[in-house]
Amino acid sequence: MSDSNFLQCAADTHVLSKEQIIALLRDDKYEKELFSTADEVRRKFVGDEVHLRGLIEFSNICKNNCLYCGLRRDNLKIKRYRMSPEEIVGLASRAAHDYGFKTIVMQSGEDLWFTPERLKEIISEIKKFDVAITLSIGEKTFEEYATYKEAGADRYLIRIETTDKDLYHRLDPDMSWEARKQCLVNLGKLGYEVGSGIMVGLPGQTMESIADDLIFLKEMNIDMAGIGPFIPHPDTPLKNEKGRAFNLSLRTMAVMRLLLPDINIPATTAMETLHPDGRIIALQCGANVIMPNVTEGEYRQLYQLYPGKAALNETPLYSKTNFGMRIEAIGRKIGTGYGSRKK
Ligand code: SAM
Ligand code: SF4
Image 1 (cartoon, protein in one colour):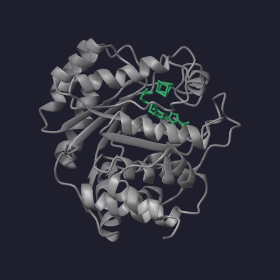
Image 2 (cartoon, protein in one colour):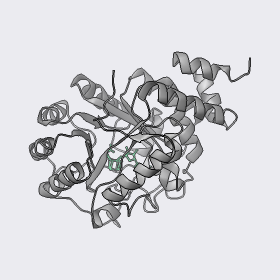
Image 3 (tube, rainbow, N blue to C red):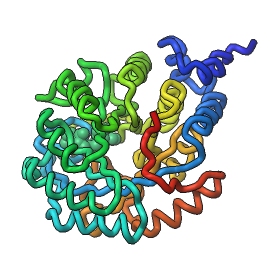
Image 4 (tube, rainbow, N blue to C red):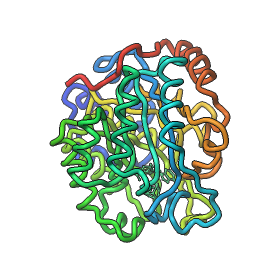
């Protein structure tokens, strides 16, 4: 028996001990086998379809001050924008009708201008386009989440970022890890498909804590897991940190696929930022979703969570045709349905 037989066992049982996870993350000893096993598990459980989600970044205004993020409120260098409801609905209409996206992801900073009433209107307008709607707009009350759900939102993405509470509280001043976890619980109770995830390579983050993160996401049985490398932004307090852990992010994502075989896992834009083919590589290591940006014009340049964000010049049409070709080149095909998790 080779000492990596536990990987084949995990492909069948979807169980790994914390020590085994750490061994898989720590170095590249098992990397090749980990990636091919995650790819096999992906094929078996979610098939060869790659689901494209059209991402609209509708406001870069944020009341929070996360140390890692270029949108944090104390970053005075960034030019702020907020799309009007008509602009958001117009973009969603083009993404759905002209480019055929079956899911629209609405993401923003925590911008209080978007009250539940305003968001409700926007969501119900977009829902008319026969699309699934994913929101990624941060921490809200149970009642607010309920309002969006009633208006037609199907899914919600809110990364836990890290399960190391001390690290979380150092990086997210004035925020509470327990409150963030409660958001995930509330979203689940309301019947959302719930997405969460983490950043990899945060300052002070250990392999042990990434292993804890993966175990947490499995225990929460989340439906989507966004795992991306932390990339330092020059106008934030973390500007001198290293981050940029491309391979470790891939390994983390691949382990996630073994632990939760049937969930949706995006190949993140942050991965493409660190490697010109980052998203296609991720698709071969366990991922099955890509979120092309359908934000247009100047706005796209202004939504800089981190510098050098990939795909700044990708138009929605380019995304569809270019991804179509790249996806086919690796023997996969673009998904035609909504791409929900089949529980
Ligand atoms: N404001 C909402 C929230 O925080 O949940 C949604 C938008 S926020 C910009 C989306 C995600 O971007 C965060 O959850 C975080 O993981 C990621 N992010 C922020 N800054 C980043 C950085 N410097 N490098 C990589 N990812 C980053
Ligand atoms: Fe705001 Fe989200 Fe950035 Fe934190 S990560 S500053 S909540 S946009």
